[in-house]
Image (tube, rainbow, N blue to C red; front, top):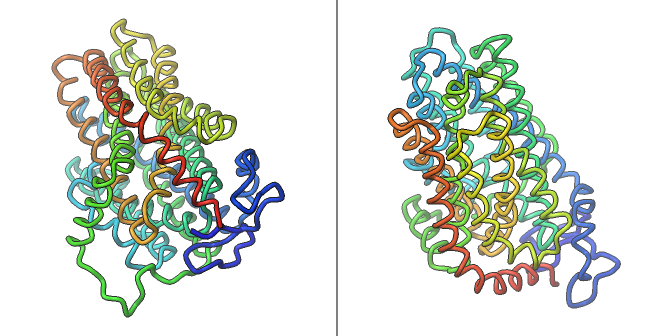
Length: 441
C-alpha cells in the first residue's frame, strides 16, 4: 500500500495520504514515529468529524441501554427480562450479519448518515409510555440493526483516510472515546433515570443520533462506493460466504476475531448489572456504575497501551492480556460489595484494552476491498457473542444467583484465552510485519 499523508490529498485512489514525518526514512517511518501519531491523527479534519459523531452515538447508545433495561426491570422485577433487554442490544447480528456488506456497496458517508437517522426514529418510539414489553424488545432490536453497517462503514472509511501506525492511533482514539461515551452514558443514564424516569430518558437519546448524522454530513467529504456503479455487485449471500472465508481462512485474522469474541464471557456482568444491584439493595445509579466499571478500566488501559507501549510490544501482549481479562471475575466467589465489584470490572477493562490493538491489527491485515464486510462480520460476531452470553447468564442467574454465573464466566474466559494466546505467540511477528508494511511507500 502507498504511504498515507495527512494533508488529505488523494494518493493513488485507495486511501487518503499524509505527508511523511521529518524523522522518516525512505524505507518507512522512524521507529519512534508512533509517539506522535495521536497528534498527527487529530490534525485531520475528517477524522475529527468521524470522532465527534462516534462520541455522540456512543453516549446515545448507552443512555438507551441503561434506560431501557431499568424500564423493563422496574416493570417485571426479573433478572431474565433485564438480561433479555440488554441481550437484544447485541443479538441483531445473529440474524442479519449480511447488512454489514452495505459499507462495501454504497458510499460510506451515506451509510453512516442514514443509519444514525434510522436509529433516532426507532428510539423515539421505544420511549412512548405504556409500550408493552414485547414491543419495547422488538423496537430495541430494530434500533441496533443500523449500528452494524454504521460501524463497518466507519472502520473502512478510517482505513481510507489513515494507514499504518496512525491508523492504530485513530482506532485507539475511537475506542477510548467509546469507553468515555459508555462511561458517560451509563453513569449519566442511571442518574437521569432516577430523576426523570426511563421513558423521557429513552426518547431524548434520539437527538444525539440526529446530531451525529449532521456532523458526518457536514464534516466528512463524499466518496464513491468502493464498488463502482457499473461494477456487478455480488449477492449478500456470496459476500457473506466470501467474507467468512477471508476471515477464517487466515490464521492471523481468525485468531484476532476469536480474541475479540472472548468479550462474550467477560462482559457478562454488564448484562447482570440490574439484578446485581438489587441483590445488594442498591438502585438504578448503582446499576449504572456496575455497567460502567469496565469502561473506566478500558479507558485507562487503552491509553497506556496505545500511547506509552511501543507497537511491537503491545502486539505481543495481546495473548497475555486476553488471559488476564477474565481473572477479576473470580472475585465473585467472595460476594464482593459494590465498590469491589466496580473495581474488579475496571481491572477487567484495563486488561481488555487489548481489543483496541486487535481491532486495528485486524482491519489493516484485511485486503482493502473486503474491509467493510470482514470488519462487519467480526463486529457482528462480537455483538452476538455478548448477546448470547448475557442471555444465557440471565437465565442461569434466575436459578443460581449472579455470583455463580460470573465466576463460571471467569473460568471459561481464562481457559479459552489460554488456548488462543498460544497460537498468537507465533502469529504476532507476522502481524507486526504486515502492519509495518502499510507505513511504507
